[in-house]
Length: 433
Length: 113
Image (cartoon, rainbow over all chains, first blue to last red; front, side, top):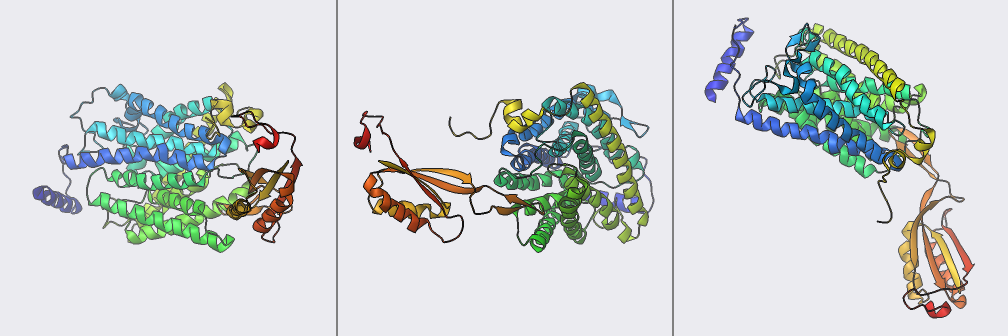
């Protein structure tokens, strides 16, 4: 082990002095890394079901709470299947001109227990595949928060299939699969652009295209569930961010601590700002702030030091607050659970702030403006802009297609009865057996 | 026989029940969580930095059946125990009761009380 560290150091130093090696380190499965990544994968899975399902489900009206939970469950299930059929190979297969991966590993063909991906050289490819699967799944599930209480279930199923295929896979490839955004040097440690900007923009487009709910009131039917869900998200996020080091090493530790720090900072900054304006501290505010902080630190986790993490967290608790509390009512769109306001905005903030705060002492792959590399900030702006442009376009197209084929909204009457009863024939709470 | 329905503030429930039991006039009490509004306005809730009004407030509805002569006493006890002096303390409704049947034995009227 010592020898390995030593030789890595030597390699690192040589790399710094500009010596380019023809041969990189030989891919070899490391049991410690593998064990951690299996656990991290399970942690990220927990974020979607039940984490996000509870977070969203508790915020929904009582009569729509099961439908809201079902949207996360079915998103996870659909993506799980599509990912192993074609998702993985299109996102992480051999690059085709920077745009998409080669479909050579359909149904994971050619992959065995000894296979190792180019993208993660110390763990089995199988582990890497399922780790990435959980990211794709939560990204799709995140969008549902903007669409609840009025969307047809068939429309949601179609959305999961089309959007994962046409929006998530290309962007994941561009950033992580060796595509063009990776080549221009955009930094995205765990998915600020791929996951949160992606989902946030799609959510905004979807909310606008579906239109407002008949009853636009927002009265969470069970805040205990919301807080439980937020807690599970926070917990699972350690797998999301620290796992994105793809190894059980110091970088994972750095990502872990900056994740927790930013989440706590944002929970507190949201709490204080609500306290200041409305004279009360709310558990929904603390939970929402924590989630916004987790979102914002996602692209930055393995790049920034602890001061960067604190600042990113504070900003992430304040800016989304104003977007959600002030801007949204003024613009009038019904992004029901603030997927755009929290994930879109905090994701963008995080991606941009990574360009400022990336500290080469944490990760030599990232050097931000404050460390003498102003161009990084502009690369971040470019990556964000390209992602927003592409995702808004493709999402609009997808919603139009779905509207054409099955329609987006349930009948007004079904909406008033509540989707749990009208779509599922179930009730979240009943008095008698 | 009379039936009393009292809508009260939930946190006054224990006192009211204690009072009725100590006076020895309640042979049984049924309680339901209800929501409603009267003169008391709702309250202002906060959702992610925005205020919203909640019109229907949670209350408890107590139902009990009494002999005619105990009604005044019961009303007095409920009034004393449930009162805070602020708007929203609730109301007491008194109804004439036609008949009662105890399901187990089939007893009717006062026998079933």
